Image (cartoon, helix red, strand yellow):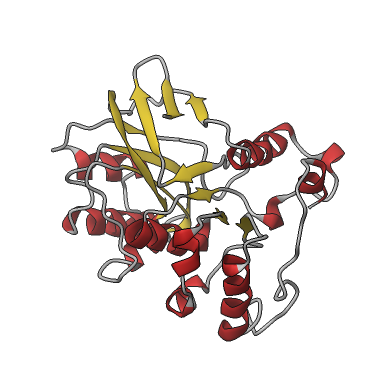
Length: 277
């Protein structure tokens, strides 16, 4: 985390970094205690998760967010950290940052690829109060339009599994972004049906589709539809803007987004722009 020190931040490493409990970074109790201490400590101004994977759902109900609600601080991460983004938005209206985590920082900044540097610098921009603004290439399958709303979202599989829980997203009048990795096309189709059948697509302000690393179909079991086909089928009855290929997700071009903050999305035939307002 040398880069963050060079940005002028003081760094404190969590107690559970380096611990192991099978696949987890420590036991549920150890991880919850470590995060709770950082949430409650007034000297800690932001918390960046070390990595994603799986496990946050095991501790979300062990955490007390009373002090965070009274004195909000940025919590940063993506993938499995979608559990936390959704929970904070649903229950407390607390903003958080969807972005790369500690394990995405390069060991040698001088050898990092330009896109890696640019995406990590977007975290600095978010942390230092800059208004976020992204202009991305046009996908011909985009649905044009303009929308304003609170930006919410994250990993599609996580959003699906939170349905019916205290962490379930409320999407009315929101700009929803989704991404995923390692899923079959039929599974992505099923997840988007879940969004539709639970009403999460009906009253959106807009939909942003990020990176989707698709698992190849098994031979003889070809699904026959693309991610774009899947999405457009589910939103065909709605008039809000939709854009594809936004630079977020399990990929190098994974830029920081401020969840819980009002943004404006403009989708035209010439450009796609997402701007914090």
